[in-house]
Image (cartoon, rainbow, N blue to C red; front, side, top):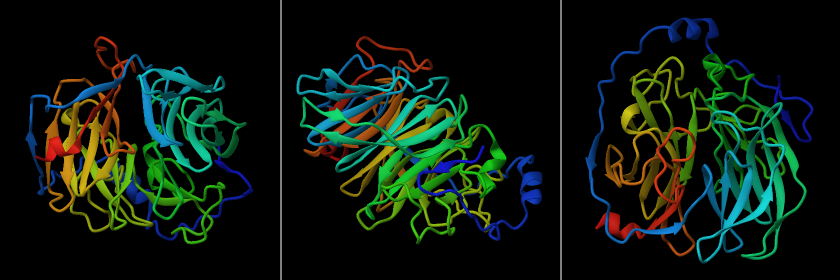
Length: 367
């Protein structure tokens, strides 16, 4: 099934950048060589002082975004979009009753650019991106009728990607997983295993690296976090398979190696991550950048990881095992770091009042 872009009847993609799909497919069955470059982490096993609970009893929450002075959260399994009030209660803004939940699919990423809330979710015919007009003020937000700007994205019980973000260029960036079809990541006729770039109207920007295509980068397995440094450098987190999870610097048209390589391979044909971690200690999902530090919420690793962008070969770890699985992290409008747990998603062990949002001053973590 080909993806459908609103207002665009056909996607034209140049395939010249792929040297040989057959060769890549053959290489994919081989075990990648062990990388010769490693990264280090400093673990802080106890919970830093000053952490406090902002909200509780969320249902498999997935994404957080600030809009019109309110914190808005998506719930993967319930199909609800809620806003968190000053008392930490979740007020339903809308329930999307046509969202199809199964495995890792459902109601996923959110992004906001006034006046639109962008939503990534799973429908009967695949993953899609919808745009809603957001109206009202905090405590009384409403959403208008949806306009689907991209549909038919690959979907499966696993590897749905799902992160949305507005870049410093005011474009909409979208992470799409390979949906279990590994070869799609190297196929520019498929949007699986890609990071996409669209206008907020859902059109393909003229300066995209592959003319007529929303593809911005490819060779991804399951990217789930996107953020930009103050100098415009774009970072993305990515789930590996059995060996290495990744933090990548994303360049237009870049090929990040999946399924040929996983982690740092020192292969000139592909772009290596700037950091990698074992899959047991990571599963990096949402990311954010504040004051020169990149923060990563980790699911399986059950920790918040930070990377000082002035020394990106090192990282520190916080809340290790304290709050279970962490799905997303963002900076509030007042500069507080907000961390979203994800223990009610069927893979975690829910604690009392899970799932929750935890707040902490980022200065506490860097002191």
